[in-house]
Image 1 (cartoon, rainbow, N blue to C red):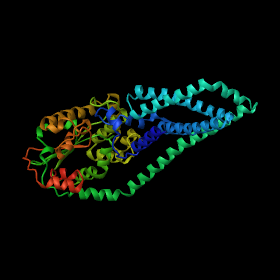
Image 2 (spheres, rainbow, N blue to C red):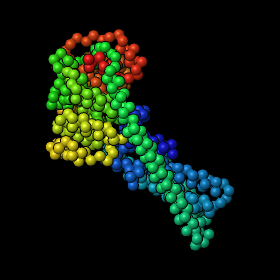
Image 3 (tube, rainbow, N blue to C red):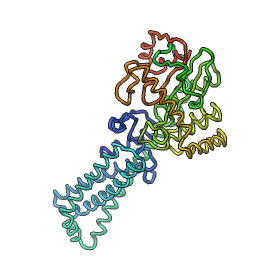
Length: 445
C-alpha cells in the first residue's frame, strides 16, 4: 500500500510539473543521469482507462489489506462461510496483481526500456502477495469451497456479491484518487494563471539584479561558443559584448519552471529591445532517442525539444511563443498536438520540419547534443569541479560552477573575450537572494 501511494503521488508530481526533486532510489538506478522512474510513471503506456497504473496498484493493495483483515477476523471468530467468501476476493485480486505485474513488467523493461525502482518494488510486492495467497489456497482452498457450498445454491450469489462489492470499492478508490489529483492540478494551474502578472513582475525585478561582475567560472572564450547551426540564436552580441548560452531540455521540470518564471522575461526583452547582449539556446534532451548520453527515457523528451527547434526556424519570436506554450502545460507528456500548433502558429514549414525530425531520428537535434558534449568537455578541462556534476556525485565547491558543470539542466555559460573581474559582492548577494540570478546579472551588463 505504501509503495502504491508513493508511486501514485510521484506520478502526479511529475504530471503537473512539481519540482520536488528526484527520489534517491530513482536517482541511484539512473546512475547519475536523471530519474529512472519518470518514463514509466508518466508514460501513456502506464495508464489503464486513463488512470495511472500506480493508482490501480494502490487501490488493489488497499482493498486486499481490508479483505485480509476481514478474512483473519472471520477465521478467528469461526465465521468460516464469511472467510470463504472474502477469500475468493483475495484470490481474484491476486490474479489481477499477477496479470498486471507480468504486463507492466514487460512494458517497463522492454517497451520503455527503464528500470523504475518504484515499479520494480511494486512488482516484487505483488509477487509476494500472490505467493502468500497461493500458499493459503493450497493449504485450505478445498475447505473454503466446501464451507461455502454448505449454504446451498445461494453460495454462488453470495460469493459473486462479495467479489462485486470488493471490485466496486477497488474501482472507486482508483478513479477517485485520480480525480483528487486532477482537481489539485486544476487548482495549481489556475493559481499559475492568476499569478502570471506576479511572475512577470518578479522577472523584471530579477533583470535588475545588482551584481556588478560576471563570475569567472561562468566565462568561456568565444571560440568555445556553440556554432549557429547547433544552437538557437536569439540575438547576436554587439562588438565587445558577451553572449549568454543556456543549455536546456524542454521536457525538464526545472527548465520549464525556470523558463516560465525568469528566462522567458529576459529573452523577450532581448528580442524586443536588444541592448547588445548576445543570447542563444543549446538543446540537451534527457532522452536516449536523441541523446546518446542518456538512457531510460523515451520520445516525448525529444519531441518537445524538436518542436522548439522547428518553431525557431520560423523566427526567434515563433520559437519563444512555442516555448511559452510548451512550458505553460503542466507536463511535457500532456496531450499537446505539437504539429498542429506549429502549423497554426509557425507555418507549414515548421510542421514539416517537425515531421522530418521524427522521421530522421532527430538528426538536427543531435547537432545540439554534439555541441553540448564538446562544451561539457571544455568545462571539465577548465575546472576540477566540472569533472563530476551534481547528479553524478560530488558537489561543485565553486557556486558559480553550478551553472555549466551541472550534469542536468538548466545550465548557463557566458562567452566573450574580455577579462573577467569577479567582484567580492557576488557570493554575499547570492546568499541573500537565494537565487541564481546574482551569478548571471553581472554577465549581462
